[in-house]
Image 1 (tube, one colour):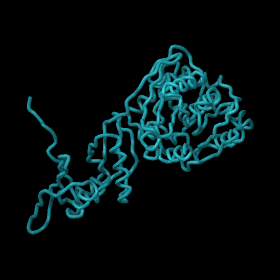
Image 2 (tube, one colour; image 1 turned 120 degrees about the vertical axis):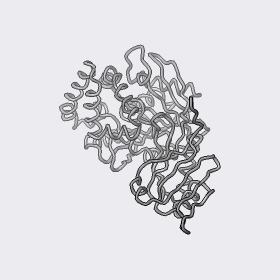
Image 3 (tube, helix red, strand yellow; image 1 turned 90 degrees about the vertical axis):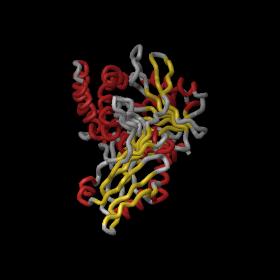
Image 4 (cartoon, helix red, strand yellow; image 1 turned 180 degrees about the horizontal axis):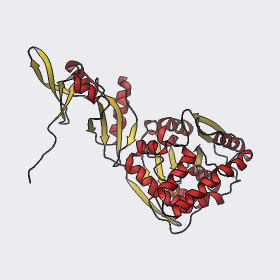
Length: 397
């Protein structure tokens, strides 16, 4: 078979060779190896990097304009720590960039770094956090652990699918914390029986016990917030604080004044979604429920955050949610006292019923405060992970 040993170089069109060459040297650490001068005018350069990567720049304003906004180059970095290091370096330089996203095959990618002509350069690592497994009553859970000796944070995801916190774990605001992200039984693993919210809380307690019994700041989203509250009630020795993002619209938490309207609005949609899932039409069930709680752009947001493969997995994982977790949610009762300090996080664009619930719950808890992430809703862990990470870090202390 004819051999290919690698990529020799990548050539990009630019408007101004000198300007772009200086940018690649200053921002990305390349050096100029060859200058191509034609009729006394600099028309191109060959740039080299200590890693062995070679990029050529060629004067071609028309093609440069056509490529503006296109992510033509993804540079490999060794690990997730290096991605975070690039984010800090760019911040220190005042160089604009986007967020750290989860790559389509896992790993982490820093997006939104643009050369002077607007061509996007991405910084990508294939390193994924190692996944651990623990047998628990009724099934198996998996988790990732950032390690370190900082304060412990446990992330408990929402229902429907398990990747709600995949973007949050990569946020630099959490670098000083030990972040453990649990994938609950039913999301990637198959439980051996029906599971209640108390079961999920007991699984989280078993994980924290496995990690040495250190109290954690427990971060829950949607139904994960209910599980976090249950954990705080059942095992207060394991919970030093709670961050509850967009708590679920369940009877024990909702403002009593909203219950009749909530039942009238949600029950038919949820009943239809359960029926569609039972008939094998998971895409319709997924869309119906997510439209109800997240709004009509949920597929675009999930795909942008997790990739098309991540969206497909989300739809598949929703089978457990419709078969098991919705029933568990409807049976959950909660009237226990929670003494741990609680931060309630709501999206500014969430519907009034959510804001009413948050205000009602804040009044029930002895030590609670409310934070709002403007311009977002129930999708905020995927769409506003940086803002949520800052709130988690501040609440953890």
